[in-house]
Image 1 (cartoon, rainbow, N blue to C red):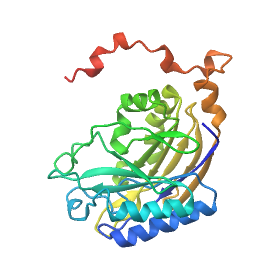
Image 2 (image 1 turned 180 degrees about the horizontal axis):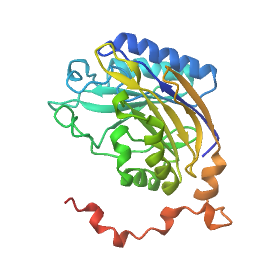
Image 3 (image 1 turned 90 degrees about the vertical axis):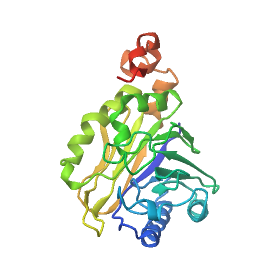
Length: 277
């Protein structure tokens, strides 16, 4: 990994207003370019606004117009952008997807693999846990509910992820967003020696839902590195020190304090993890 500057957007998305939300996404990408950002992440379903029962009518095809538009924006800005959206899946129900567009205009995607109980009737779950290679870092994506499953972060770390981006669409009614995130995201970062970078939708979606916002970066030791929980739309920029990862991953540690814990795992003992009760 090389030193990497990331940006996390707390974005107010208007439900169903794809053109308006897209314009806002493009403006943030341009702003991030001015700030020298390498990777920018937008919240879950920021393109259409988050809704369970109203996602399908505005779901987009990938590839399609959106990959061309965002690919051109990423190329102009010279950065990698992660944009949350509802994607046509080829099935009856759309997927919750994070589109990843690179500085050369190419794209890849991650489909949310772990759906909440309230999402199961309306969305199709993804079945792959990919990692993505940017110029300066390897990263993975976990969308909201995915983060509650420790195995996902472990798989991404074993595949080489140095950063895990965590786009959310968490409503106000959930409660203290920082307190909730720190309970489990610090553990994901520490146990797997990765940076964890989360962002959330914020404000009203214009259709009755209110999102609490929040942007947080946690370092590979489980410590908060940068944060914003002011309840307002905006962009948090953070510089990730590659030395924190490289010391562990390249086995430069001089004490157990900097061990890559996953090197000492015992897969032969973990059979129950793959048996669904």
